[in-house]
Image (cartoon, rainbow, N blue to C red; front, side, top):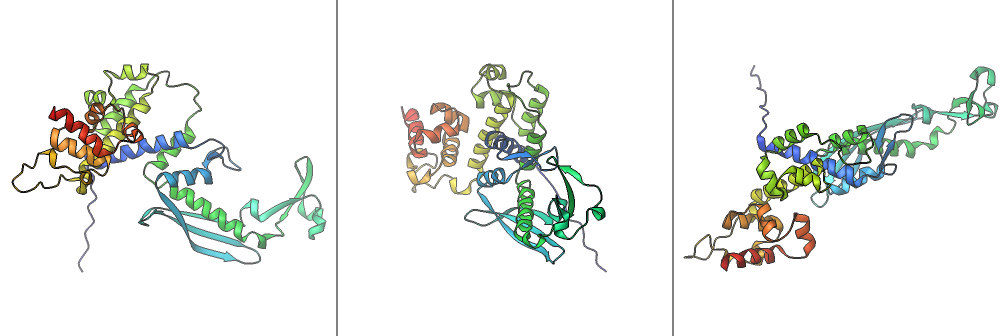
Length: 331
């Protein structure tokens, strides 16, 4: 009988760099967007932090996706209500699944299956059969089976769905790791007092960026200059990851390959570029690289911008920026 071979699983330096970019940007997302007490807080019945619905929704919006729920199992009897739900995260517009999660809930959980009452006789119990009461809110109460189990169907379904959404949220690129770091991190009220240089150099190496190249990208002579400007090493890594991601995207976008010029003209002549050829910043970076060997950081410097966000906020179109670069070289 013929035996099937095992599939070969491989990775690459580009894949490793992409994972590190995702992790750094995800950490930036959860640190800057999630609000303590609103988006995450102490999980009921525990001492640990957990993501709340508003926080999960903010992360979904940041990744431009939305959750849809599918019931995998449901049981509703006079004694038990149970749901197991799968949530899939779909990209807006294309409806491509980018994450999934599973969550379950049932009335067997103590907070749903039981109630604490002061007068159990009303529900057909005697105090003797229930044992000793416990003090609840300063009043002696007895624990009985929840007499309103049948009213909890929607509650159980919603809780199972909420747990599945949280599970799915952790499958988005870098989010699970970023949330773990956020929840485990002790509160800090001041910037890094002692920069963790060992961790910084390690992450910089993982991104594949040399020290001199990083200085050029950040427009500083040294990282000490960066720290003297009241910025942190984590912020440096975040900015470097964004710039590297923009450069990578510009190089990998097929639609942004320089168009063929009219017959008889030189391919490298930028005068043939039209506004339609530069629809976005990625195309601007690609054209500057193709015609003048200018990396994205040099493009931003010549245009007097610090980051791509500054360029976007300026209101200038990518084509107008290209024309500015062209005028300098024509002169």
